[in-house]
Length: 249
Image (cartoon, rainbow, N blue to C red):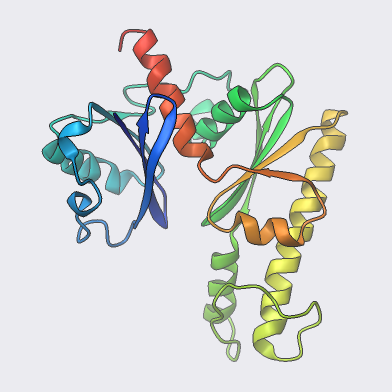
């Protein structure tokens, strides 16, 4: 079985695959990963035949790799170091693209009909665009909803820190709900507007694939049809591993 690991700024998302089937998924907070034992989540580490890591947190990559190697006896492959994402990358400086964004684009290009727009709502919200020929065109990056809530608290004198949840109404009648309405409805409308602009730029319709921890909250208030694929990145990591095996890694 394959252990796929996606190291993000907020969470480390892990999936165990048996062939193409995701049989187990779990998350570990990135900040506490040194204290949280993977052994508690991996009940049968000897069953892991290989591991592969996609990381956007360099300071955690080596640490997690060594932990997994000690636990399973298998040194993980690192995407970007040991394995490349097999998608044509049209970024002006291809090395600047986050590996998670390329993995999402590759996974979407396999699972869905291009052209595509992938929205990943996590610590940051990213838009990634895949052409009709399944090339990675580039995208957009903006602050995620949690970052926006934190910024309001840290950069104002009177606004409180608010927990991200559903707003009660569009027009907030207290400070908490005014903030929630602004962040949630504002993000949903932002996603709608940017998706529309991207489709216009492509001069054709494009399916929107949405993933990430807060994506269902955006979907609930969005007017754009979104295909939700919560485990898109993990599926992409699995695809990349299988592609690498065919290339005799």
